Length: 307
Image 1: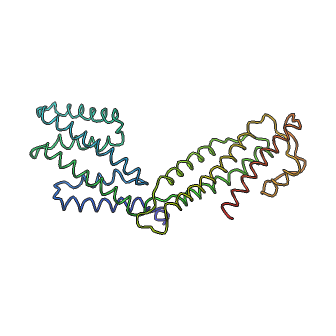
Image 2: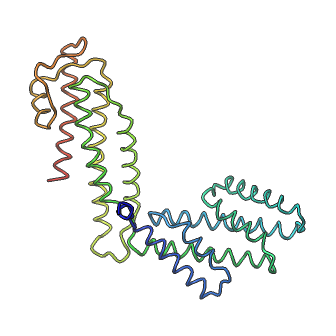
Image 3: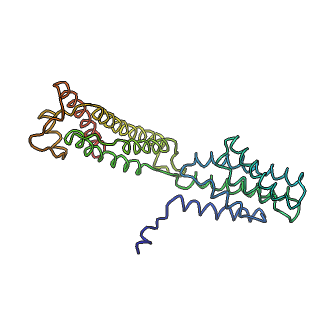
């Protein structure tokens, strides 16, 4: 039962399966003798966003055509002999090297497959056969691109909100560790999650609304993106204030007003909290300043999420 609970069929998986089915149907209608390449093309470029699919499709087109051209050169100019398998290895190396040189790294697997398939074909004219495999692949690429644009484009809004909520929850324990326990917490995991949040926001800003989703307009998407960026800026501010606290070489005790604010946020403040090391009044003022700024941003972000 635990195994079945872990099974999750995502939107991208459904769209990939649908793209494969449509690509095979189109290839069959067009009379393809080997429609598997249409399926391979559909699978290889199904990405989270239509812009990624378009970029990957163009890369695959260029890479696949490159593999086809190199294969044509090999079958036309090299005789079939036992050493031909050595030349196959050399040809594959050529495909990989040229793809890297032309920044077509993503297309290396499919380009290599087309090259090997054309070179190993013995049923007739390999050049014509290779061109048909190239066109079959193009069918799959085109179908996957259209499916990704038309059917429920990737919308990661809820994922972004969840990431923001989880990030916000991490600040109070880190603040408690620095201000109350006089420790210097590791902020690297927090920075990594902030970077991932920024990546998701970039995807959200580039992704268009669904083609037939009339309830969501482009202007509304822009307003939503601006709102999410504002929330991210508050998280960035909190991160900056926490980093400033961790850069202090002393650990003063915040004043009574600031300790009361910390208690209101659920931070455990023990009685008789002592300073750690030598601390001046300036250190205390600096501590109060950064803690106050962090809590202000925290409260404002809470209002935006729940207000």
